[in-house]
Length: 482
Image (cartoon, rainbow, N blue to C red; front, side, top):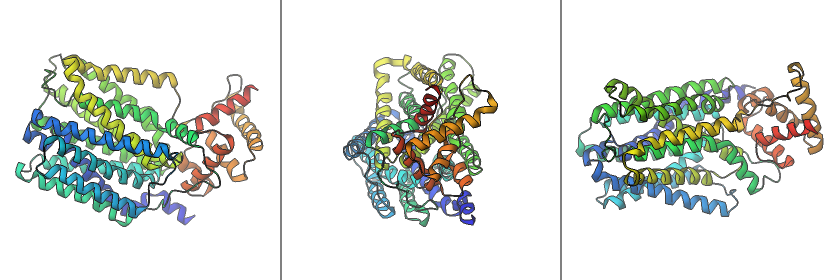
């Protein structure tokens, strides 16, 4: 019990915070290299630096696409490695990224090297995040964005001649974080299911069920980031220089604060993912939908700055949410972190390139593309109206009294448990799962680790021949109508 209490706190925070800050150094380095207010971008000018940014996205796309193809061919189930392999991958990535940023290469070559190296580092860090508890993921993501915000603010005042040196230091710190003892953390290695695991198709279905909402939102934000990168081509008046850099810093700080609050909520057994995906992110969507209509109205610098801060906060929240969801799904669905990282990186690279290039095709009207895409996104979410895997809730049929909900769920779970020959512990896990409880809550209730809960859940899915909680709940409803 004492061990469980120790695991339930971000007691690992004492070990995790240095590593989280090092991960934040990677975010800061990427901001310096590809954000339109990054120190390198401002020093060279948007037009001169655009080939570097485009090639950087191309590096993400090529590396991510390669990972997807490789792990799809392997059935998604090859392990992405241990701590030592993460350190080696991260070290190679750091060297390539530094070469792309510091070696006097042509813009396209430098950007491609920076994107490829950053991809290797992100692959290593995603494997690190996949071995954390949910509360730790939110804590680490929040602290990383806070670190990136501070570093971005300081870098804006660093002399241009020293920016390259600072970037090299940031990339070195990123790799150092993978060398720290916290790299294994309290969660330890990813638990493997007992006996035969899910089939490749079931793994992919489970992965998609838990990630498609935040991934699509994150891909749209990267697309918006791409076509708003060079606003000179769009003939749109925006804040420039220090003002826009200030919006970026405050936006990341707001995102960090929200992730920190959700980390505390998760430590108390709450379903932080559900709150983030079903409440916070839909509110941020409204910012992206409404903001373009203010660009043609003389609203003043204050209103533009407020929308700018909220927009940057939206970027941080959507990207952080996708990062957390993918690292969690890699563990829950038994899909390798290599495949998960490939989906994330390929999507970011493709959407970034599409955003950078579409302005040449559509011109200023592209400013409304984000609003249109996010409108479709929120409509689809409303139509589907089903929480993510960790947030699904079983509902009673329309003719069942509220007081009988517990009895109805219990009877159906018992019948299905008998049909699937579940063990006593698997029956307990399934009963709590169908009531909408999160993994941390189930682990606390049964006095086991979160990894053990995930193992039992995977065994239930395997025996039921399903891939997600949503399918489990659908079977319960189907059983009710039989």
